[in-house]
Image 1 (spheres, rainbow, N blue to C red):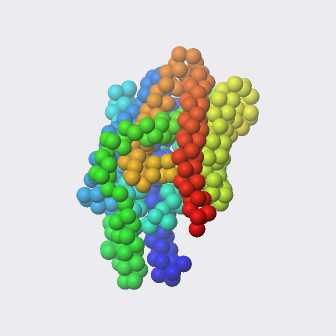
Image 2 (image 1 turned 90 degrees about the vertical axis):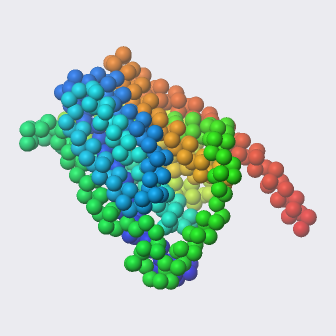
Image 3 (image 1 turned 60 degrees about the vertical axis):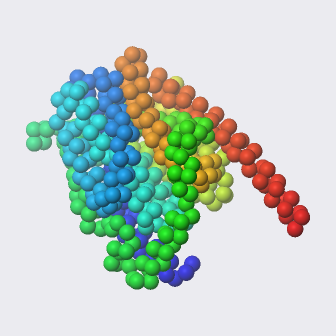
Length: 438
């Protein structure tokens, strides 16, 4: 590796990546900590499981409609100010959840939280295109995705502890939890404003030759991209392969948020204290975080995607579905760990597969469509699980429904893998013929 490249990327990655990963951990925790709050909040406010599930999921409605406008604003006002703005507003609104008094205020706060946080993850990905060459971007995105399970690993014990502190300053435990866990985002908003820079030309901490190399490399990559307007947004967005990938991603995300929002309540059913619930509920996410990192490295090392995608999806289906069929807590917890390993191992492999299935002409628009439509399961899954819980007295039916949709996602991924393989065969055959003629 060229010395200037090595020096430049070491400085860039050290300056931005740890900060942005911490920001995403805090972001994801503020998104899903309502699952822990429900252990006491629902009883205090008289919420049914349907009300809780709907409120938890409404976050993604606000997120869905404001994701693209937020990214456009980031482009206009600069990543440094806009990401800091996102963190400041989501911290204030997350803290305001402590003061909801009924269904309507709960719904309103959750929608507003989605609006406030909209664009954070895709905004950071866009920011990375200004700073990180493509050869380094995959490992950085992998670090961000690992923040999802590890946010729950950290948040589980902390949330369980805070829930048990009811009475401090006259606040109930869930109110204290929302306020305390919102503080890091407010602090990080100031740090982001101080540390981030919009473009390499503003990087006073890079040497002149380092700034030149980075700007030249990124400009070359920008010139290689296929402009979206050459193919048309809607022409790409409605293509069957894009919609099928979105449908498969919908199933993977449903696993993620089904666990994130309802795992604390499932574990609480093991007759544990609030603090014990926090620690035990963190275990599946710890397994999931390990799976995401180890399985992704294994896939990269072997340069194989299809098996590495399908096996964890199958494990997620077996683990989540099987956990609803047993009544012995240690076995149920073990199966939930299998499910968490499966879903978190599958997510980065999915995004590694997508570029090869779409090709460069459809990648930019396809990524946005798949991510936006897939994340709508963050609304559907909690609402359905909550409604089934009210109707049956158990989360089992809702989790089984998520597992059944996971089966559909599995079938889609099997078919897409065979489709991609068949599409590649003529090119491989032509290459072999060319080699023979040579």
